[in-house]
Structures are given as structure tokens and as C-alpha cells.
Image 1 (cartoon, rainbow, N blue to C red):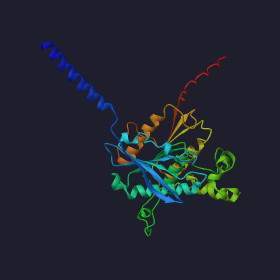
Image 2: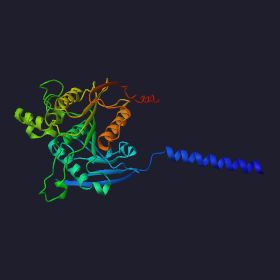
Image 3: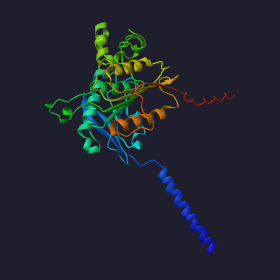
Image 4: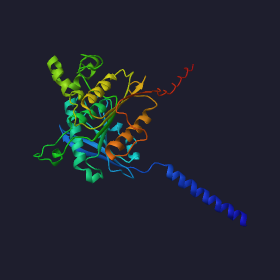
Length: 326
């Protein structure tokens, strides 16, 4: 009888170790708080979902859900940021064409003020807020970086007294200059390459004067300044929708100002869809760790332009259509 008992004991130990290993390898639980209202206007309530990590590091990442300045709750996910310790605020904004880009930018300023006003409630330092997004979400991230600022100390709503400035940015393929979209003088304020987005810019884009005014108002490159937060950008140089020159020229502007900006160019990559994007996101987490928490990365950031290869994501093979039966 001793041999079976010994076998069962070893089996129990083995199962315990296997369970412990599985527990250690499984992602830590993340608490999700849904549909937190950060503002109401024009008959709608705008919300964010908040993802709280099991082991928060005290910093927050604001993730903007936006593609073509359209935003919806179906696109909400935590982006993996809580697994890196960041309390994550996933923001949904008003969608064009009902809301124009100028109004959407205002929504994002309000979202940052709301998060800062409630920072203690959600366990984050109000001075350790990063922002991220892709495409239109990247544009809105840079608008916060370059135009975020003090609130109104006399505002009736205490949220509006808070600053909308963020402390670090990491984004993918952001528009930065609507007056020079692909080439110098290539105005895209609701015309040309962005004619399909005319409604997003509103009636002011009907005239050359209006387009010039809006183009400067909504382009982060014209608002870059010495006091802006550190910025990390990843952009493919084969992007057919947002030219990578949008990011290279913005980086050049930051260098002229002497402010921190790191740009990674993915060679041959388009508007998303490369296999190395998870690696880029990991690098962005290191950027936030450095800028918000003072943690040194595995490899130093050069604050220049680095070109890296890209591998297209393989599309699933099409399922053959069965031949009709007779």
C-alpha cells in the first residue's frame, strides 16, 4: 500500500504545482467600471469605461476610441494597459457628422478634466496621466498634448476648474497638419483626400478662408510648444490614408523647439495592420513608465527617428464557395 500512497502524494503535489503555475501565468484580474458619464450636452451623455488593474502603479492611461472621428462602445477594450499596471480610461466621444471635430476636441478636454478631478477616487496621481490613440485618436491625443491647459478657476462645475493637460503621449499614425496633408499646400480640411469627411469640419470649411482657419486650429503642428509633454509616435511609411510626413514634420517641429519626441517609422507599413504592433505597444508602455514613473526602459530612447521593418498581418484565407447542387 505504501507505493500507491506515495504515487497519489506525488500526483497531488504535481497538480498543485501545475495549478500554481497556471495561476501565475494567467493574467491578473482587471476590474471594469462601465459607462461612467464625463459630460452631457446636446441631449447625449458621453461616457468612458475604467479598467483598474489588480496591482496599479499609480499612473493612468487615457485611451481614445476614434476612427475618422467616429466613436462607439463596440470598440472599447483596455488595450492591455492594465496588465502593465496602468489604470485605463477608455473614452468614447461624440461622433461626426452629428458633432464636428472642434466639438470632439472639446469633449476630450472635458474627459481629461473629469479624470483629473476624480483621480483620487480611481487611485491615480492626477499628474501622471498619459494618452494614447490611433489615427483620429492619435490626432486627438496630440491636440491634448499641444492644447491642453488650465481650467477656469471661476467655473461653476468643479470639473471645469481642472487642467486638461496630459503628462505623456504615445500614439499611432496621427494627423498633425491638415493644410499640408501629403504634399505642401495639400489642403485636406473637408476637401481633397478628406472630402468624404466634409461634415466633420462643418460649414466653415465651405470657403478657402474657413479651411485655412480650421486647418490651423485643428492641426497640432501649429500648437507645438516648449511646455508640451513628451511624445512617442509610430507611423508606417506606406500609409495611404495619413502620410508619414505628418509625423516626420511634427517630429522636426519638436526638435526645433527642443522638446522630447521619439518617432518610429515602420518600413512598408500601411494604416495599421503590421505584426509588430504589439512590440510597438510594449515600447509605448516603457515610454509611459519612463515619463510618468521614472522607470528606465530596457533600451534607451534616442529622441530621434528610428526606422524598423514591418510584417503585414496575414489575412485569413477566403472560404471557398461551394458549387451549387443540381
